[in-house]
Image (cartoon, rainbow, N blue to C red; front, side, top):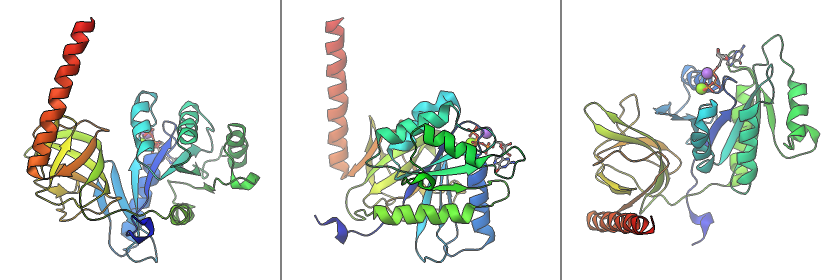
Length: 295
Ligand code: GTP
Ligand code: NA
Ligand code: MG
């Protein structure tokens, strides 16, 4: 099928970087700044994910995912990088290139065909900030910054004061335009679980990033060894959503059991989902039996 005939979808942008380099602060400022400016469409807030409308571009938005920088969360970073179109690597101007900065650079290099990199040198408001020194250090790590003739854009920002954030969003939307992201909005669902938990009153819920298809209340989903008949689609603030678009994240309730973070989500008819689940469980049982024989 001709991809150019498909509707465009918002870019999925994952914010990554070393612990305490300011990822969450940057996103918080981006989010509240957009609220304060009263931009069209408002803001949808999700667990670990939210979307911001692009200024002056009606109907266009960016889906942001936050990730932790702590060393213990490398699996989460890998998961984030795996579902993303653009990685924004946040590097604190007073701290420079650190272990999780390098980890993110390696993740992006490994998946370079599918992921574009944008660098945000953060905390430029701090007295000890030296953005040029950080740029040199990134170049030494093999990051081909535009300043040095490469193709990786780099924006100097302060998540605290908001300086440079408009330029960061502009840069992200330019990169996304080049990627020409499109997705089928109709038909079967394809997505990934970003995180899951048991929520009082709702039971197991999962934040799902939708990549393709039509996800509505009543959809039948399969994920790992569990299934859902979608009961509610909501934002964490409790707003009900009737129809999720590809490129958006949403909290899904109606699961029989808790789905695993990182697992693939697919949809089908009730009968298809039931059959696929039986097959998956049977296959897992056979594999477990074979492992016992091996041992
Ligand atoms: P993890 O999620 O734990 O990896 O941290 P993070 O990268 O999300 O950093 P966070 O936003 O929690 O910020 C860490 C500290 O840096 C906080 O004390 C922030 O107030 C501070 N900070 C973040 N951005 C800036 C900035 O632009 N300027 C200054 N001066 N401080 C900042
Ligand atoms: Na922090
Ligand atoms: Mg954080």
